[in-house]
Length: 284
Image 1 (cartoon, rainbow, N blue to C red):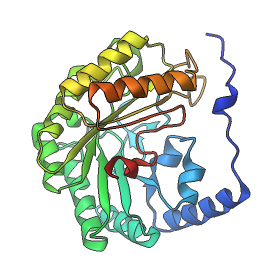
Image 2: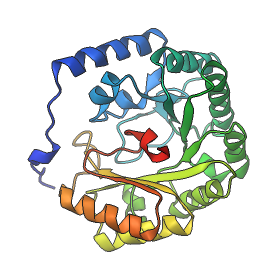
Image 3: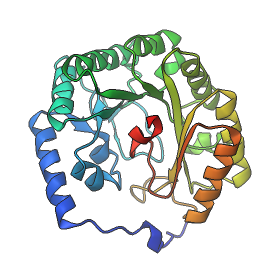
Image 4: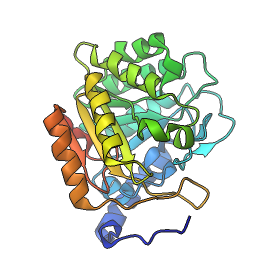
């Protein structure tokens, strides 16, 4: 497929001040030996977020046991679980003074609990170091295990998020090792938990139709999902799934209007939106 030319609305400038502030955050994170999805996934917002003193921490290593066609995170044999990581992440949260933090991970199909116990340990350490910080966990599907989800839920994060990523019809080529219905069922279980808000996100520009997007919204609302993010897919390289369309900003606005009409309590829909971008706004 011929590579599409990136439109002007997807070109952004980074100021010198942003770069300087981002470097300071990066230095702190590197010094504590913690990872962020911001850099691992090549997020276009990393400089802005780092300059604001925020980051989405990625736990359980940098090698994912799955190999989704859209994702820039490394696929490979995962490392052993680092038992010292929860304390280091909590220290990073405290030193950055974060009032809201997102914790995500690679998928660890090699672990019996999918890494759920490690998520719980990270949440507990953050609570101990920074009791006022609100915590969002962006979790993998844990192979559909209700017990793994309960392990995370019992640690009492404020938001549990799981991304659908794309419409049902594209799962075979975009997320071949994931199952649409399994992810929906996980979100439905999250929605039934007391005192925890449910959230999901997906990308557009992968070849989906508007009707398929609307059906995905209906499926998420059928699972009682409360918060929704929609962003433009940007291919990390020519080896990844190609960008089929650069969706116009006004289409994102229309998707947001439709989502709110369907009953989502919070919607962020714009080209540069990512699941954890300005995530704290959903609870404000």
